[in-house]
Image (cartoon, rainbow, N blue to C red):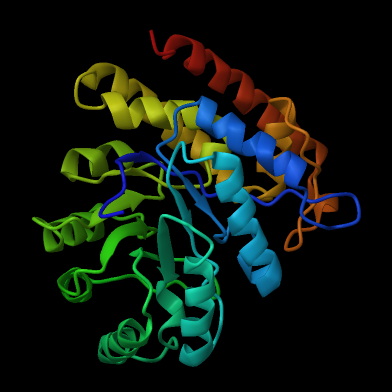
Length: 307
């Protein structure tokens, strides 16, 4: 795949069975739920998928099963880039690429330690690319864990110049950063996807290709509408942006448990179980907040339903 379509790429969560294994029945239902709402593709095996808490075998299986359930209807992007040493990262990346995914997404903070500068990043990336012999579109994800490493404009130009990359999940939450990255990639196949709801409309106006964030698990259809119609329905897009930005404060709740609960309200067979978050902390007040937000979300879904 030379490039990926513009639009919405949900950062997929991992459902679990009662005994803590990956629940593939629930995962298939979640894949269908998103595809029915018109997403452009899926970002599987990412931080929302709890990739740092999955074994390598589980990460590979999760990627393969996600691809199987999609059945070629939309592109599937995978990461699972969690190893510490560059040697292990290269071998891990080869195995993830061999799952049949449409793109492999690297995590920016894996290539360098927190204290190392961009020259080390460039050197390690050159080593990675020289030894990574798979023909697959690559991307980057500014994953917040274990620490957030944002790409500057100079590093963006270097990455674009390799000719191997076509995707960035941007988590800067700052329009100055987003504009600089879009400008650095101008004229190439490289596309920026914003993970931040509050800046989404402004970023689309600046040239962002779409949205890839955790709020898709609450109302991916509204993000699909925004990415399709922000340009030809500006007044409606402004109104929707105000709701999406306000609703996104629910991210500061107990994620991904709150997203799992929202999907339960949507009728999906997903348990409130996470390997990184204690579901017992999901309070009655939090449940009420999700319920009320989802009722309001449904009103917007009805109002913004595609003809």
